[in-house]
Amino acid sequence: MTGRQNPVSDFAVDFDHTDPAWVADPYPIWADLRERCPVAHSARYGGTWLPTTHELVSEVAYDTEHFTSRSVVVSNLKPSDADLPAPIGLAPPITSDPPFHGLARRMLLRAFAPQPISRLEPFTRTLCQDLLEATAGRSEFDAAAEYARHIPVRVIVQMLGFPQEDADIFRQFITLVLENVDQSSEERLEVVNNREIDAYMDDQIEQHRAHPRDDLTTFLINAEIDGNKLQVEHIRGTMVLLMIAGIDTTWSAIGASLWHLAQQPKDRRRLIGEDGIWDTAVEELLRAYAPVTMARMVTQDFDFHGCPMKKDDWLLLPFPSANRDPHEFTDPDSVQLDRLPNRHAAFGLGIHRCLGSNLARMELKVALQEWMGRYPDFELADPQAVAWSGGQVRGPRSLPVRIL
Image (cartoon, rainbow, N blue to C red; front, side, top):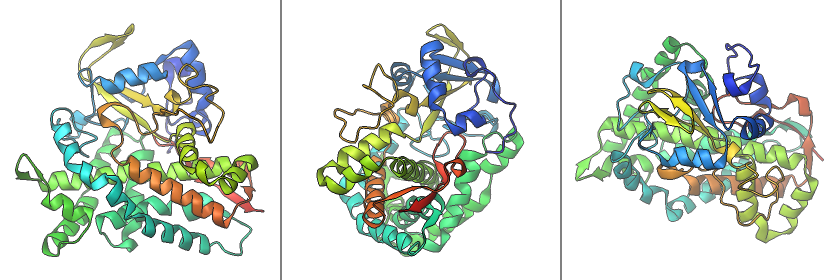
């Protein structure tokens, strides 16, 4: 977050998802809006709307007629200024609209099914063990910087069949795309038009064409839609999708879960003592600390529950707010590791529900299991030093912990 925007005085009429108060703790803001102004509006970023209840968030997520996914990151740059035409968009299928969206999504389903994801678990578990071994003998360290942030990027690099030493390239790109959203439109256009990451991916695609392997890049090269091979722009765009949707999000979920467990010894004891609780615990941590607020754009002028939405207005979809709606979840601000049922929206709703949910669940579960196996007792070393990311993906970027 670059902090260029003026401070917010009233989130109902002038909200900003990069405001320091939102970044530090958005839950009271969402709770207030759900009661006082369930669809907030702001003139920032050229006009942005914010539904906050589970019912309204769900309604927007399922409405592909009035809301397009042409761009899913709110910034000062409109898609029309960046030449991101529908229906494919920058990162298909998350930036694709029907009917192309359905074709692109179905093509990917096999690669993200439980069986291929399970084959990544041994790599993920060894990675977590190695990262924890690097902290051995230290009573204090940063769990976000030295553990959580390395896991999803290294797994995605492995999944694509890219060199592990290139992981930093991905992390830098994520910061540019997801966190520096309050830059000027000119600065954002430079990010979109950055050809360095395109050139890197094109080189990897050519290497995989020459030497096919059992990885996602070769899968995409061989994939077809309606009998046609994917264009290189589509292959590259899906790789961008993995970076945008699969790295910062899971990094944030792991970090937020560790932040919670550092303050809840009862929950730590349950994870250590109750083997059968892991699956429901993962779902509850995802619900309570859902990292992703997605975005849509309004396709045409229309009235949405009394709100006069205009074509090309932004709309934020705060799935974390939907997950804390008391009309949908009993005692929603309480983390109950055995909560059932738990139909949370951490992976989104509607046609764009996260394709990589199996991958994210596996990474979160393995990361927490390995951490708790190594460090069953720990606490925040300095609660005031915990720093959260700004923008549409929320998670701790600094998480100093003390091993007990």
